[in-house]
Figure 1: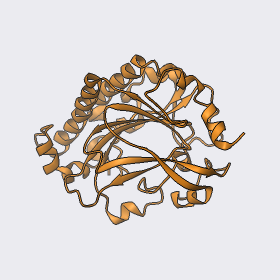
Figure 2 (figure 1 turned 30 degrees about the vertical axis):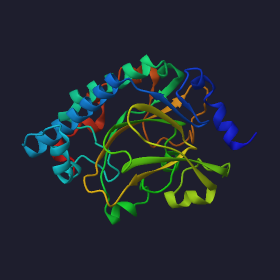
Figure 3 (figure 1 turned 90 degrees about the vertical axis):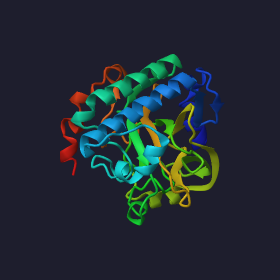
Length: 281
């Protein structure tokens, strides 16, 4: 059996949930307008709380205000070079609300119970990068699989929340040929190009849907450098389908939770959320 066929088998139960798109190792489900709106408002509330706490200034969740303050938002001290908004103790309530919204949506779509392990949801901001960010060892601007950076679980949920997704997005690919060792841990995302050939674009991130990709669905951040007011907000959740084996099981770089524990997740108990925004550096 080919490597790609082996990866496809992981999603036999997922296919029964009737996804809107089924592209073998890329799936999507349409989101109700109301659910998309709730995710957007809840995500912006986290950024609002973060901004107002750190800068002691009012945050307005309008396109005009956000576009005028892109640099201040991206310069918040608890945002990593790859755009991850690290939960901090001042943001615990807002992150717990976001988690509950995500859980309700995945229950509504009858998807969540097809997974046995999940990582903490990640809220992410992407803005045009500097040269240093582009050259980072594990820069998301390079084609990659998260498995190369030590992620053990087989799949990733993604939600496009806010922004112009034609100018700031994620591009998803499959390869015509995969090396059987493509999902091993690598020292640099550049190393990965030795393990596949002939990429084909499968889809782009957009709002209004839940996307699910396999770790073999390679992807990268795309940002149009000519577009000035360019900020994207998105959510990603690493997850493991029930009938799949944990990757690189002897190495646990990132924490994940059994499904029932994940459903009851409380950000106040996370080590990263015991730190203040003001101690983030």
